[in-house]
Image 1 (cartoon, one colour):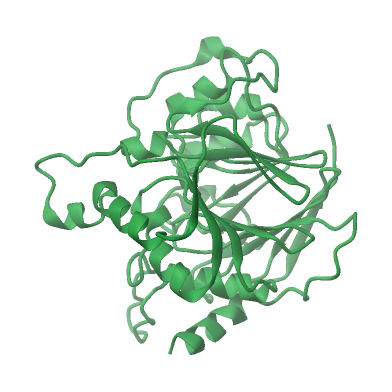
Image 2: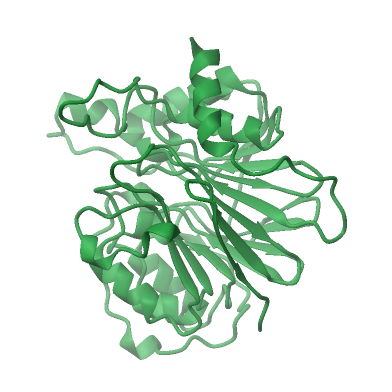
Length: 363
């Protein structure tokens, strides 16, 4: 049964040609897997080593809503979609699994993933910090971080396990991951000099839960290219990362924080990191908030915004359909693929329709 499901899911991600032999000029591959508003992104070096950041939802949770008048879809499984994408990319194992924090849409698929594909090492920010309110109902408590964290530790028992602190690095072939944020701490070096427009910062208390702010987030350096993936890092922590000193610098490719939610993606933060290409890892009704579309589109160096799903809550803000992996009325579960060259050139591919755009390197 699982083999059949994986084979079917692979059809949605195997549109691209098989990987070629790695050369010095080969790009880093980034595959943003559709886990229906959760998070799961594969990074594959030209040498074939892999990093998976987050694992989406637990099996049977988080799937698309049923379509009236159509047969019920198979039960949704984030881990199966991730493994299908990995195998379509030529992988037989995940070398590093990074769990950014312990919300259900990021850590939920860990146990199932480990049953489906070998994993070398697991990295996280350390213990869960989010405690549910005493009044929390049982349904909420079932998927609360305080419940999920012990289950996560049990699932990874016996694997190499590293708790990564802000400022520490992980080198995988020619890709270096710098933990710019971990457990609410920010790395110290000012990579971008003094922050700009710090006097315009407006605090925001809403954080969606303590674990969001404690996300393990990375600046990835691949030659001259800079990629930013800070998971669900929230507004106030973002601002701390760029003001008074910009401890991230400008980036080429950014996965928008918190699925493109308005409790993240501060205008001052976007002004300072100034991404050239932004990806929304959103669901149809999760993330991709209207205000964030506006913030991203006014970022000073923006060349393109791409989405995992059409945003149903703010359809007037959506990008053109060729830049959206999953649109209403078509096959769900499509990934987005990025190819990042060492000189900073980025090529985006939408496997749903084969649409490709290339953004040449620039300072």
